Image (cartoon, rainbow over all chains, first blue to last red; front, top):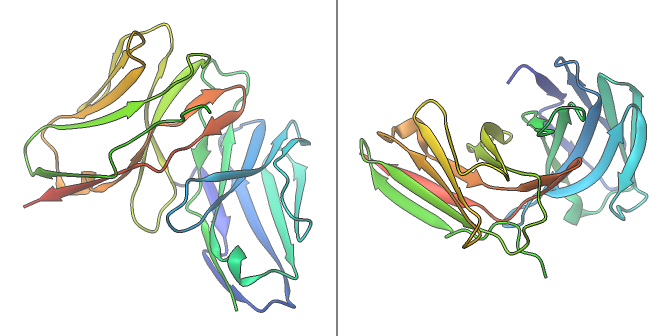
Length: 114
Length: 110
């Protein structure tokens, strides 16, 4: 579990707040991902960064803004969120040159929007 | 539409018995399949993967079988332990894309 770390582990915020989620991978990978996991729903891919460039954006609302300053760090900036954005936000990383491109996940940030 | 891993939602097994978790898919255009385990309050944990040109792969206490004829994937866990209680996913992978289904909740009974 220490390969991919996420902070904070829990976050409660109001709809007018601005906060950021942080992810760090210690695996030497070159791709990082943000997923959203809501209750009773499958994991939803939000963003993909490969070699620090965003390569996927699955029509996520603009109130979620990712940032990937280098291959080891990934942020998700949050502003003007809605209660339905409450979920577990998971970060993952992978080595895209690997034959199976297996993604390794962090423990997640449990976000509650009041 | 494309299936991404249809699961039975729940499975209960007695501690010490073997568990078999099944997964079906509808589209064969996938490079590999991965099994993840997610315990309550944690992120998904990689268990084992199998490339689409293989039929079987074994790990520690786990075996994954891929039957491309019937488009079926299974995860077998030997001597199931309480720590195996979790939700199991079999997303399909291809070029940075993992598509998840809803998973199977495995409960190990004492």
